[in-house]
Image 1 (spheres, rainbow, N blue to C red):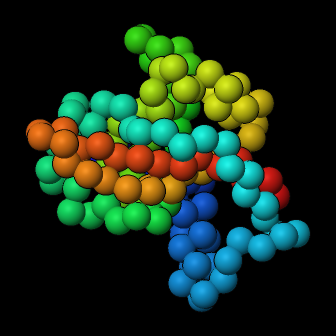
Image 2 (image 1 turned 180 degrees about the vertical axis):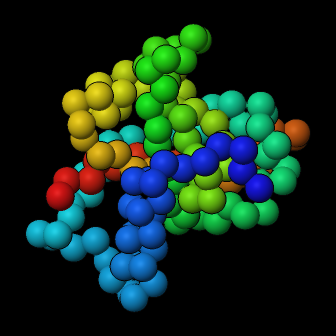
Length: 134
């Protein structure tokens, strides 16, 4: 169970997306257009209980991006959560500035899990980040 709850808005957004995809719908224009921004690994997976979370991760899963402007280590930090609200890690510091600026400007960014692969004791998780233009 997650110790990091999703906001009501994030829960609603995930529920809408999940229901739409379950009905076999895609994200077609003009309702929503997704603009691919970057593909990146998820930083910090070794700092979460990743062995408990790993079994629930599947390629194509929607991930939640949440700005952490009050993060003491990185004021541009973007937390990555699973759809269940489990803390997965962060957008790497060397890749987060433009994404953080977009989010701060009110743009809605989403991510999708691309792949996962154990490399020794480290789970390498790759994700693609999109700007959702509605």
